[in-house]
Image 1: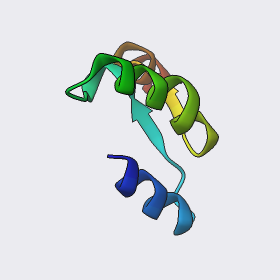
Image 2: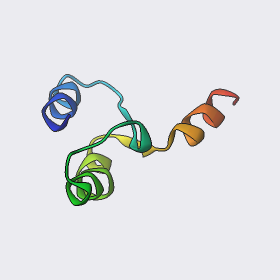
Image 3: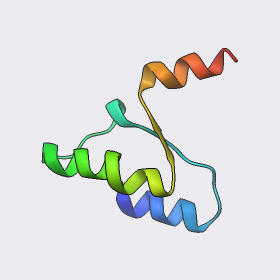
Image 4: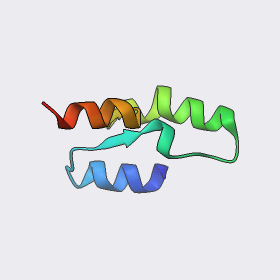
Amino acid sequence: MLSTLRLAADLDFRLTVLSDACADRDDEVHRVLTEKVFPRQATVVTVAEWVASLDT
């Protein structure tokens, strides 16, 4: 997922990562990616937060 996100960011897409709809084999890697790495290039939200944003 990291490579895909970086490529999309390089192509100037506005990105949203649904933190509870993706995973990594290692829980700590998932935590670091969603809390530290992905927020630099994407909006990171839960599925519930994303769904709620569709109503606005």
